Amino acid sequence: MGDIKQQLAHWIPQLANHHVLVVGDLFLDEYVLGHAVRLSREAPIPVLEFVRRFYVPGGAANPAHNICALGGLATVVGLVGGDEAGTQLLSELKRAGIDSSGVIVDDSRPTTTKTRIMAEGSLRFPQQLARVDHLDRRGVSCGIEAELVACVQSLASNADAVLVSDYQTGVASQSVVRAALSSARAQGKLCTVDAQGAFRKYAGFDLIKGNRQEVASALGFALGSEEDYRLAGEQLLADLQAGSVLMTRGAEGMSVVTRNEGYSRLPAANRTDVFDVTGAGDTVIAVATLGLLAGAGILASAQLANYAAGLVVRKLGNAVVSAEELQWAVENW
Image (tube, rainbow, N blue to C red; front, side, top):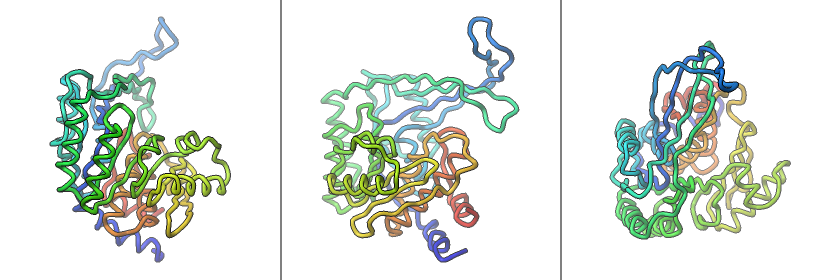
């Protein structure tokens, strides 16, 4: 391996054994798979005969799952409803090794559930035909918000970093975000976020992540040339007084802007073997956070996150990456 690959390989074992408090919107991802047997006479759609159903923790639970898969400890702060889906999600969190001590049951809203209908056949992976989301985008009540703030303040003391995953379904309110940042700052701990476009709320964070569409929408101009990305990153960095800004660009890789190292472009590690991009951004923020905790610095952390994203898009649904897989990708890609 070249020098850069050797340096990245050096950091992979050191991604383990860090404790991250993940704050955000918890989802239950449900997959319903069937064999397509014929076309329906009622509509131009296939008729599926049921084969199996499985569940995966999604939303903010996905970066938490990635952290655990790499040997870390993740504690989540978020909400579930007092329903069957909430019970299932808590079971999936336990199965993934995620500490759910910060999960609050809110009987006034359903557990956010995303149901994907998939057709199995001769192809390598099932094909998604439809998705049905069951969610409530209302802000949480004052009482639930106070409970979330108290959980963040209490649990942050035992963590090495606070990671906010904002899917904009109510958990990451201004008060909860302020509690996350102030708790991390008071104890000198890292604070990172996948802002999902809500950038202004996260001023002062150490690392702010967004994708190309979110950044373009927030700044009001299209991102085409490399100069566009550089200017966009520098503007977000200055406006938000952030430590670093990471912009994911799909098949074009990612761009990173930092105060000390300026602008860098990382080509995609895997552009050809892509099946499902679901959750790739969750993997990026999880691995980048662990890299920073390990002391790898933002550029090396982003490079590791880039490789990890290239791995999970080869898998079905909200997937995670192991240290062994990440080592293989660094060596072979």
